[in-house]
Amino acid sequence: MEKEMTSNRVQSQTLRSAVFPASTALTHSLFLVGGVLFLSALAQIAIPVPGSPVPVTGQTLGVFLIATTYGARLATATFATYLLAAIAGAPLFAPSATLPNHGLARITSATGGYLIGMLVATFVIGYLAQRKADQKFRTSFPMLILGSVIIFAFGLTWLRFSLEMSWSQAIAVGLTPFIFGEALKIAITATSLPLIWKRISRKLNA
Image (cartoon, rainbow, N blue to C red):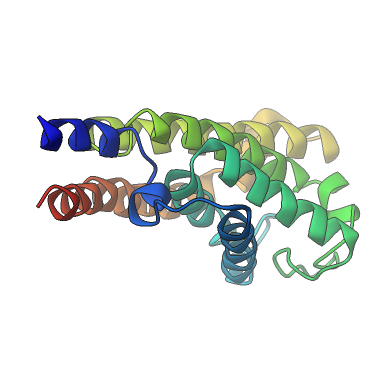
């Protein structure tokens, strides 16, 4: 009976709380700062795409990992802090040939919609992860696909109206070049999460 109760409790946890069950203001702050630095590091992995104002970055992978590991509340707070710190002047955004890697101008630029979409996706993925969607293959893939759809829905809409493009033009420069990379990120993350949960459950129930 005790093991069954432990198993049910583990399944309702995030990865963070399963591995680090002690929760204090200090640990939350450390995770938040660590998450901001992690997102910033992945943002620096930026590859320009010819003909597109949107670079290939590691940011969406960061969103997937932070959201599924932290859960909705802490993950959203982490990404919001990342945005606010960068807006305030910290050089955290992806490098750009035409814009600085900080400041409000990056949010209001043609690519700002992707950042807003990431904030929304962070909450949605974190919410679903708290409800065990990251613990099985059949739910981890749809969860991350939904997150990616949210990011690109905001990004493409913002891009289209900012640059006065047609939808076909916006899709050609703001989605098509990134499909393979996004599919790869989703496949790696969605495959890894259930395996990680399986291992954690075995250790905590041993």
